[in-house]
Length: 464
Image (cartoon, rainbow, N blue to C red; front, side, top):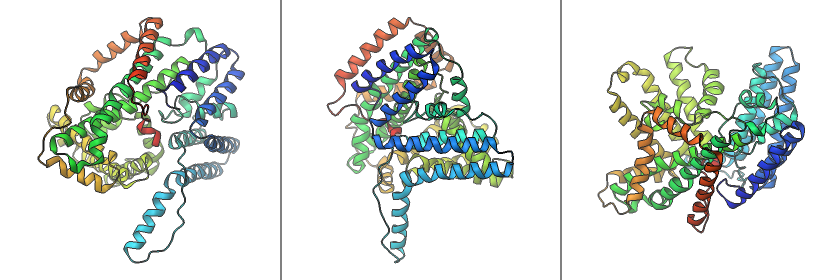
């Protein structure tokens, strides 16, 4: 069930009204929200609910056993088994076909081809997100950062529909404490929630989907048919599209959670104003960055064992972060590209800091754009074709005022002083909820009247 659809427009007001009515009766409220979240998830495929329930029970059992054990070795063994089973589920559903096909291709290359069992396994929507959150719960219990929660609380944490299928990745210690006390519907941040939902819809439907239909999808489908002007514009347009698509989802998710009485962490902070790769990953998909840091980079050794092992740890973290995004060599190469950039930035930090800020921004931005070409391409061959066309002569056949305006607005607003943008958002959120609601209703009517016949495109991060 996509957020910007008629189906969800019917689902959410009903859930919200019942939620507000049940908020003071917390035990019943929790059961209802879990039920609503599973209904939401079942719209993708009812069978996926069994996987979500299985992951919930597995990690709850692991957390309880870890908490009861006083022996540190036993605790490590239990968390190791639980996390391994989580990752095994992720590997089977998301990476089985990729690795099996890669091994078969490698064997064929050296003349040792043999038939390997290839199965078509449906990828559960959002499996990467709720698996990572399940791991965060189990590990946080092991690290004594949270106490084991009740089973209904864990089920609610992992299935909560605003973040279920595409994040943000909400840590157990960020969400579970909020379930300790019932919410008061009179204290819900209605203005902020509605404003964020409206902003997210504008980003997704008005900007991201328009850029995708108008220039990004046509050029990436057959880059050999276009010259440098269109290819460059498609690269910039995808840079704007993926930001609006993913941050738009996040805005809607945070807004929905606020209306239900809960707070999610921030996930984006003007990433295209970054002055380096480190700065970019402090601003882009911040919840994933923190997860990779705390659950991969630091356990690998972080920066504690010398500079060369620090480079190794950085590179491996980003390589695996790229693979997390999708079972394809383009994602692996994208992760490796960012990992190499982080290593070089660490190695030459003093020299890098001495470069003019505007030049650091210009270099960083275009390296990020280059990375998005790898990320968007369906294959390494397509990526190479697209890159080679960046220098091919041709005319600007797909340039238009709305495309140029969309790209300039998305990137340009992030370069403005952050206080000005924040103050505007605060003023918007302080408007009377009725005013915001009317504006949101008008926006939804506009969306319904202007979306193409095939409907709203799925969010990009639904695939992950």
